[in-house]
Length: 368
Image 1 (cartoon, rainbow, N blue to C red):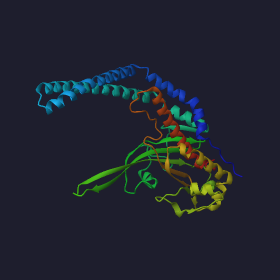
Image 2 (tube, helix red, strand yellow; image 1 turned 180 degrees about the horizontal axis):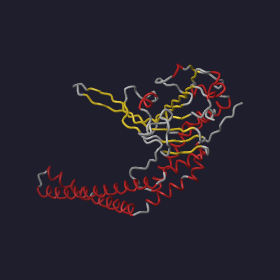
Image 3 (spheres, rainbow, N blue to C red; image 1 turned 120 degrees about the vertical axis):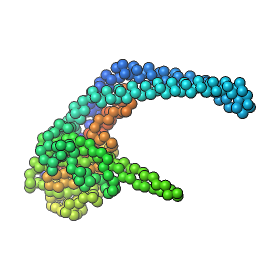
Image 4 (spheres, rainbow, N blue to C red; image 1 turned 90 degrees about the horizontal axis):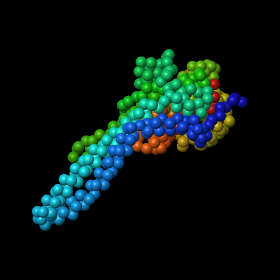
């Protein structure tokens, strides 16, 4: 029987990452929260709170004097109310200014964290925990052929690839608003896997009873992943799909039913070569893939997955969070613990989601 690759569960990945990744992130974050910028943040926060509290008394006096004064035509009460209303407004403006300065300092801390954190090193360490034979190169990859990778001049896939392989939930008349540069993971030193994010917008127009039209936008964030499988021997190549796609089905692939009903239900395998499918998806491979999916899919941040293997190229597309595969930092870093947990959770989810996807062709050893 053909060898089948094993996999790592998310819980085991997190346990090891707690020891190897979390301390690195904590150190970077803590250093930025030890700067003058954080002292400025705390100072402005304190002043903003004090001034905001100081508005309570003049606001109460304003309500107690201005409204009765106006209702009873009491000139002195009205005048007192106006004076305290002015004091209240001034205090609110001052509190707003200091709150703005507080947020500016928090934003500067976020930018400093993002600048000082070693993104490539963190992603590399995370991938090495999951699969030591894989390497995260990020943007440090020199492509030689856009058919198997991406356009060297733009660092993006061909535009038609984004359209052809978008998830079926993205409407046909949606358009691309933005595309991120490709990043790369190399599998077993042989198979580069490139991924890029596309921001799709779908516009719908509605009209009210008077004929006034309004445009509503629905946003989709989609990641396209492309694996260069040229190093796979010709005799081992084949074409198959998981999950199906109403946008693309090369050569009219047919549904393949294998012995594992759980596998059939989860992956909805399609191909025109049933014999190769039975050689590739052995009972052990199907069991491992089904177990990995059932145990770990909820720990990923990807949905609506499509997979299409076409001999020496494999495409995967899926809905993902905005900025998938990049390190996200809170827009306003206000607390070191929450900021650390935010960054750490983002890295764990993104990297494990990529690993989870690649395992779909790695467990059955289509790539070997």
